[in-house]
Image (tube, rainbow, N blue to C red; front, side, top):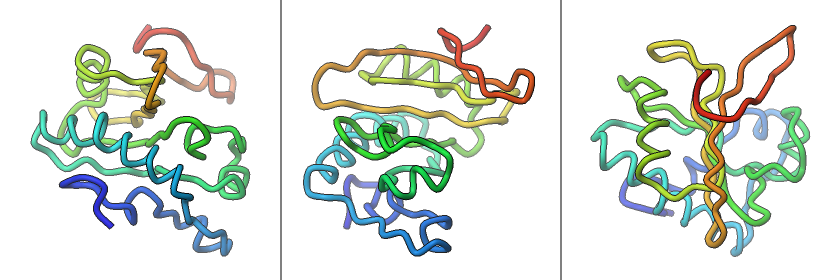
Length: 154
C-alpha cells in the first residue's frame, strides 16, 4: 500500500526484530492516518527537496515491538497521537537534512541522533496532525548513556 509517491506502508512497518520475535506490525486505521500524514508532511517533502533516496530505519512500532527494542509503549513510533520515523538520506549530511526540516517543515519533534560528520547517526522526526511543538534536539552518548540536549548541535 502506497502512502505517498515514494513511501509505502511496508517500508514504514518493516522490522527485523518484529520478524525475529514474531511481533505483529499491523497499524490500526487511526495509526495509518498518522503514518500517512508523517509521509505527506515530513518524509515526502524531504525526498522531493533533496532528490535523494530516504531510507527509513525505524517507522511504526507496535507497543510490544517498542518494548522489545528498549523503548517505551508511549514512543511516538507507536502512533498514539503522532507518528515518527528514524531515517537518513543517501549522500546528504544528516545535519544539513535536519537544518532543512527545522527551517522549512512543521514537525513535532526533531532529533539529530548520535551525529558525526558527514554521515554518522540518523534523524528522528515526528509529526502530529495538530499541535506540533517544533522541538529540536540532539542526542549523544555521555558516560555510556544517551543524553538529549536542546538544539540541533552543541
